[in-house]
Amino acid sequence: MTARSAGQRAADDVVTLLRARNALIWVVTREEARVEQAIADAAESIGCAVRLWDCATGASKADGEAVDASLTDPAEAIKAVAASRKREVWVLRDLPAFLRDPYTARALRSLVKILPASPQPEARAIIVLTPSADVPPELAGHAVVIDWPLPDRAEVAGILDGILEGQPESIERPTNGARDAAIDAAVGLSAEEVQSCLSRALVTARKIDPKAVAAEKKRVVNASRVVEWFDPDPRGLDAVGGLDVLKAWLVARRAALSQKARAFGLPAPRGVLLVGVPGCGKSLTAKAVATAYGVPLLRLDLGGLKNKYVGESEGNLRRALKMAETVAPCVLWLDELEKALGGATQGAADGGVSSDALGTILSWLQEKAGSVFVVATCNDVSALPPELLRKGRFDELFFVDLPTASERALVLAAALKAHGRDPGTVDLPAVASACQDFTGAEIAALVPDALFVAFAEGERAITTADLTTAARAVVPLARTAADKVEKLRAWSKGRARPASTPEVAASATAGRKLDLS
Image 1 (cartoon, one colour):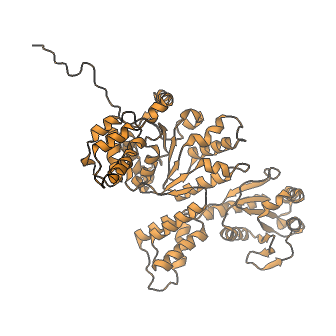
Image 2 (image 1 turned 30 degrees about the vertical axis):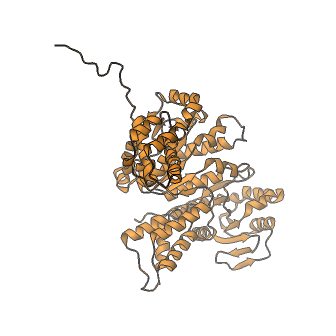
Image 3 (image 1 turned 45 degrees about the horizontal axis):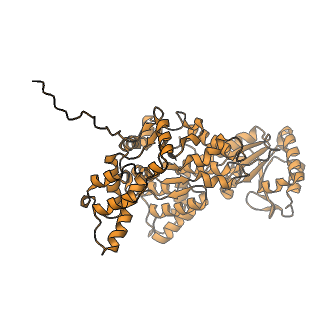
């Protein structure tokens, strides 16, 4: 038996609700045409006629034929539903904007209270079609909210086949791997966006090019303004100097994102929380792990999102998390988590916005569907709500400390490679020794400083002396914020796993030779 698509399952839910005589169904979607067609098919399957309404075109049938073009007032439309004695489903578009009018809101509330008692031949229901999940408090007890899913792989495949159908033989048909790659690249978009991406690729390349589809998808996702499709570091985990324990753990989890792992019954990895000193590789690791896993990297700016929904609900946050699930498998990067959620520990200092966001994120981390690997970073763990640190939210909690001597050399080598320089031309241990207590970012910044000097002196190669001279001019964060660093280290003991193998200090008596003969 063929599994039903996500859209078909949502339509099944509508049928169930209609049969249960739910009078008000609140459907959250941006895909008006796709969802209206699905609702029409669902309603007609149980003998209900469908009427569409909006303030511009009035009332019409599901096929677009006008019923009453003069019925443009929302309150009058609600009266028309009340006066009808037919088995009907009325789909009201853009209604939330009109519910600010007390009369319209009252009329709808009064109507949905009496509709469930109508005789079966006169059974009517109202479906509100809107991008917003914010149900007015007066209607919250009457409305059933359905968050309509974006097209899944099966639906995207159907759209792809529909576009290719009837195309001339000169159009190259994607086979096996290319077809699957194109479908994966388009998942996460609306049906209209999928059609646009695939059609554009077909026109420009005369074939379905997965890379072209992915590029268009990146543009669409970034335009949503709820998540950012971030370009991961092409070097992968090689870009991260040191952090050997963390990198080994990440590599071990990579296979768990595969289909074989799902078939084996292995649970999808939840993700990792990286706590530690600023500038020591937490954000770089997030960008590198997406490359290592071969999946997209989505960055969720909780602080920026918070500014957008002050005075509104957490709808944008839910939409962002839903998009991550749809794009999955992917890496979701939550950067500087404490800045966005710190207000949740300070009562209603921000109007409860942080508390709402925290509740949404906690629930999602616990119950999220799909292979979304979360990499969350935090510089000040004291500002995080304790419930976020509980086992089960993340697979592991790592503490990222200042780099050891050997790690400082590795960071410097990675920075030299990133600037097109050969690490073998520099005495790495000598420079690492001059960078005691430096963060990784401070070490990496020495390379461009040395390059400026070398360029000014005849465009010569940089030397060990250039780097050590640049190091002497730096006052590291570990000294200017020594108290914060020590507090972080004290907190991590027994609470977080070290991201690096500890450096063993030499004993005071090391090397002593005893004469036991």
